[in-house]
Each structure stands twice: as C-alpha cells, then as structure tokens.
Length: 259
Image (cartoon, rainbow, N blue to C red; front, side, top):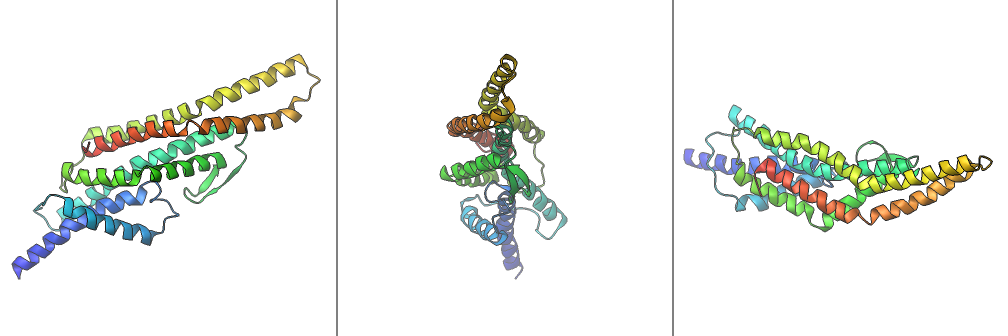
C-alpha cells in the first residue's frame, strides 16, 4: 500500500504543478485571459492542455509532496512563472491599445469612447479596434499554440523546484515596459506627424485669412483627414505586429530559458 500511495502521490504531482503553470498562463494570456472568456471554458482548456503536455515531459522525481510547505512554495513558483509568460503576451495587446489611444487623440476621434468589457474602463474606439485586430491576428498565426509550446519547453529549462528565477528575467520584464511604449509611439508616429502638418496648415490659413472661420470647417476637415490617416495606419499593422511578436517571443525565451 505504501508503494501504491507513493506512486499515486508522484502521479498527482506530475500533473498538478504543470497544471498550475499552464492555468496561471491562461489566466492572463491575451485573448484567453480576458473577462469575456468564461472561467469554466478556461479551466477546461487548461486541463486539456495539461493532459496533452505532461506525457511529453521528461520524468521527474521531486523529493517533496504537494501537501507540504516545500510543495506549497513550488506551487507559488509555478503560478508566478505562468503569470510571467502570460503577462508577456499581454504586452502585445496593450501596446496596440496605447497606440490606438494616441492615434485617436491626434486624429480627433478620441471623443468616441465606450466601456471596454475586457479592461473594465472607458477606452477610445480606435484603441479597442486595434486590440480586437491584434487578437484576431494573434489567433490567425497560431500565437496561442506558440505560447503553449514555449510553456512546455519551460518545464525542461525551469522544472518544478524551490530555486528562484534569475534576476535577469525580472530585469527583462521590467525593461520591456519601455519597449512597449517605444513600439506604441513608433506605430502611431506617422499619424502624429500627419496631423501635426494638418494643424500647422490650419494655423497658417488662420494667420493668412483671419476672416475665415477655421473652427467651423477645421473640425470636419480634421475628422475626414483623420479617418484617412487611420486607414493608412492600419496598412502597416501587420509589420508592426510581426516585429513586436518576435520581441515578445524573445522575452518569453529569456524569462524561461526556452529558445
């Protein structure tokens, strides 16, 4: 009976800690970690992925049990690793939300805002449009499968244990906030420059012909030109997404040690 209990305990542990890491990753990953995804569906998907991933992992004989203090610490560590992996993908979505907010403010479309059910706050429609477009492209290129594959590789480079993540991993996560703002500004830079030139032209017209009521027609012209600028900005969405997605994959590889 003792041998059977030890085998059963080892079998449960071999599935429990991968499930903690994978479910934590699903909890915050882009698309799957949103409020629109039902919790039950997320749980079922985590269980299914765990059942598919665990047989592919090398056998590990951990010297501690789940119902112990070391096992509790390992559970916290596994949840933290999964959250870091999922949070790295969230950078991808929030970059385009930020870029959309900047574009909306520059093109005069910032007044069109509504309550975002994903973030629970009021965001510009342009930012929500870019966020939805990012989610669709992410799913179309099988980004979720790539993240699950990198998470599976992380069990080889970061097996369950009591050792902590390296300081370089935390530094990379902190430094990527700057990368997110840099990518958002670079994506919205064309619209910023275009609207700056348009507003500068209106300023010259006001100085040259003060009798013209620029404020009455300037708003309508700015709106029309802003929609054109937005249309031209969308044409470069895929190239910016591809570049940022490569950097997100590099970030996950640095954090987990999986190439």
